Length: 284
Image (cartoon, rainbow, N blue to C red; front, side, top):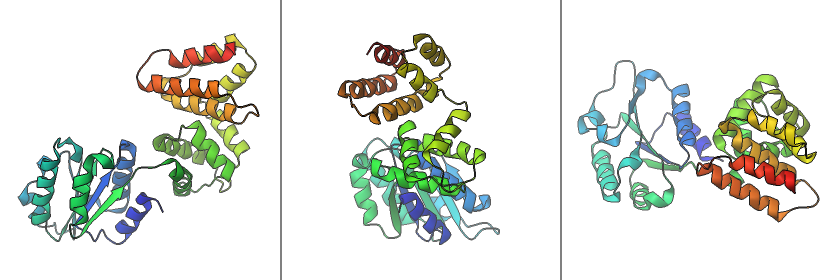
């Protein structure tokens, strides 16, 4: 079970713990926690704070309103405390002052290795639960199934791995594509051919046209397609190229190396990285 599903169970139980601590390097996954809370809990009960420093002792003991039995305090940007000592001092302060009618949702945009001491402290704290929201490669099929189920659709096994490949395994992009797919096709066993057709029809990117043009060594068509590619589509294009070359009988380590280097260059902000990759693929 994914961490996010475990949290949904907690929400269904009325958030009985005093503190729920979430961490991830992926901001989208933290935003999913906010989505769940806002979908399932009355807005009257929710208060949002952009920084831990905005939380004062009086905030933690203030009475609930007549319309709510519990106050849900969402605290963003826990990672902005630069020193571990400051983070732990803050945690000590709030755990000593928090009222039984308050549930604290703490969001931290960092990896677990950056907050080892804080996690250790919270593990020893009564009524505190810790959620590592990171999605590793092994978790991605479950993530696809989870998001698909939220939209009333489902995918066959090959389609699941294809979607992961063409989105570069990015949770936010997977979620976005599933939402689009659910609008076009309400089906619980979408196969890989249906998925490819749907993705091509959305018009959001030209990944499959690009692959076909590269395969045929059609330089004019290839670069014409590239002119229509927005920066937000680069991960989809690289994922589709990776899928194409991975499914050829003759694997080519040189191509995989080029794909990896291009992905790294794009993330570092280097201009024309995708164009240079396509140029090399057309030459080979």
